[in-house]
Structure formats: C-alpha cells, structure tokens
Image: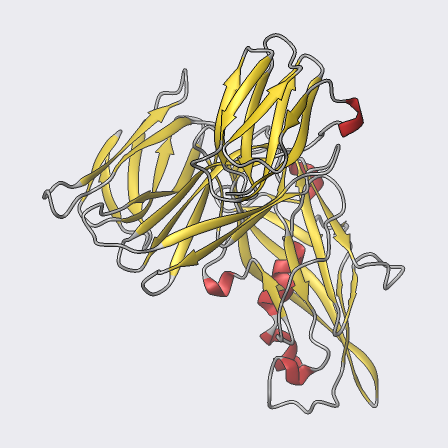
Length: 429
C-alpha cells in the first residue's frame, strides 16, 4: 500500500496548495470520466499564479480523490478502498520542528506556517467529515490558500498527511510531500512591453521591462520557457518566439515575473479563440473565464491579463474573479496566436425595477434607442462572451447602431452616479 500512497503524492500536495477568493471554494470542476485528478495539474505544466507582497492572493484547486487504490495504480486490486486522506494540523514541537503545511524559504531556510506569512489554508470537504481536513475516497473536493502575503520569498511547501486504507482492518500511513512551491514577489515592475516578431519582414521580437517607481535594479535577467537565460538588461531581443520571464534583483528583494508571449506575426494562422464568461454575484469573487480554441496546431497555451496588462493566470480558464476587464492570448505549438480583448466580468448589478432608463425595440434589428439616461451616464453594449461591442456617454437619449453586430443576446449596461444597471437585449437580423 505504501507505493500506492506515494504514487498520489502530487495529488495530495496540490490539495494543500489550493486557493480561492476569500471564502469557501466551490466544488464544481468537471473531471469527466477520470477516477482521480487535480486542477490545476502540475504534471500537465499547469501552475498556481504568483503572489504579490501586501496584495490579496487567491487561486482555486479542485481535487477528485480515488475510490480505490486501483484508480491510481492498476497493480492493486479494485477491492482495496481508499478510505480517506487527512492533511495534518499545523503544529510546532518542543524542539521547534514544524509539521502540517510548512512553508520553507528556499533562500534563508526559515520555516513558517501559512498564518505567519499572511495566509491561511481553508478546506471544503462538503461536510462529509467533522474534520475539515479529511477527504473521503471517491469524492470531489476543493481547498483554498488565501490572504494577503506580508513576506516575500520563494517557499517550498511540505505537506504532512495520513492516508487511510483497509486491508482486513483500517490502517494509516504517514507521509510528507515537498512537490510544490509558492513565489511571493515584491512589486518591482510596472509592466513589460512586448514587440512581436515577423518572419516575413525578417524582424525579431523584443521585450522591455518598466521598473516600478522608485525601484533600482542591481540585475535584470530574461529567461525562456525552458529556463535558459536569453539576455540581461531592461530590454532583450527575442530570436525565437515563445513565452518568457524576467528576473529582477534589487538590494532588498529578488522577484520573477513570467508569462509574456512573443509571437511570429508572419505565420499563416487559422486559429480562433472564444471566451465564456461567468459573472460574479453581489459581494462575491466568483467570476470565471474559460477559453475555447479552434484551428490550433498541436498543443496550445493561454495567458490571461487584467486591465493593467498584468498576468492573472494561465491555462484554459481562471476563476475567483472580481468584476473587471480582462484579455487572453492563446499560442499554439507553431507560434500562431489568437487574442480576445475587452472581456468584461460584471457584478453588483441593480434590480431592473430600479432602472430610470429604458431601451427599445427589443428584439432590435438595426438600431436600439436608449432614453432616460442621467446626465453624464455611460453605456456599453456587451456580448455574452464579455466583449464590449459599443460604448457611449453623456447624452440623455442614445441611438445605438446594431446592424453590424451578430444576431444574439447582449447585455446593455449603464453606469451613472447611482451605480450600474443592465438589461438583456436581443438583436435579430
């Protein structure tokens, strides 16, 4: 049984590192027909977003616990059940030894529990056990690490667990896993400017970092996705398009910022991307975005950005979002790319009954007439993928041309001194 338990070390380690918005995460990931799994899955190159010093940190992990040992290792009989997996409580022994979920600074070798660096670990076992740290075999769960980190560093995470199984009678086996790390950066950069390559014109790409106000770097180094250094200094030439990161060193902190993509604009590409938006509820951070890709050559990767151009996640989707504007850049194995911009996640919309404005006709064919606006109010016509199709501001009566937008359902959003209200409108040609 020991080999079987060790074979899912990555699964249990992910569980201890799961994250969400401030509050309990939702158990809603689709694992398909899999017997066990995690999302994000580090074995697939998926990872958790980096944290930033003194800024809220959140991410989410979903986990499917296998029902039997055979679900992980086919050499074990399907009659050998996995009863439960228990993540041990944080403790400090008399000799100062830390156990439970332990964060070790890889530079100084200092050790911490989550609460000592401004974080907390929150589990959601769906009430299946009185012990919130217990997860039953054959069930799906999620967990969270959340808070506002108050100490920068690169932390190695070790997780002490007990895995319970039954051979004639229940027994447990203790293990410690060290498979994941968490980086908390200092706010050293304002952003990175990307200039794409073009093989037809014979031009190479460039990356240029802008340091945050008051920051003086002692060293700046650039790396490709394989971890190979490609240059130093504030600007670097990119010979081969791909995904890159920059390591900034100051007298007080070392921080790495990654995920910037340089593409080859000279390629003949047919890839397209479409984004599905789940808006947030009132006073919640449960917005989500999922990208669907067609026409990609080989595997593809997606990088998500916020309105300021900072990377907020990678992979097929991101969740735990507040209201805001986002974009996603998808790149396939030959360097083709597709970008979706102006993706709006909405929240806190007032009840339609409280609206002081109206829109007609609905359904609309060529135009929408919007009247009753407050002076200075702004409006936006948003499709169901969260993209802004048209905007306006300042008039009490607006005529919105919709002859050039596709037939379908849209959201007309109005913002004034009372807040934001919205109404669904249907365009039919």
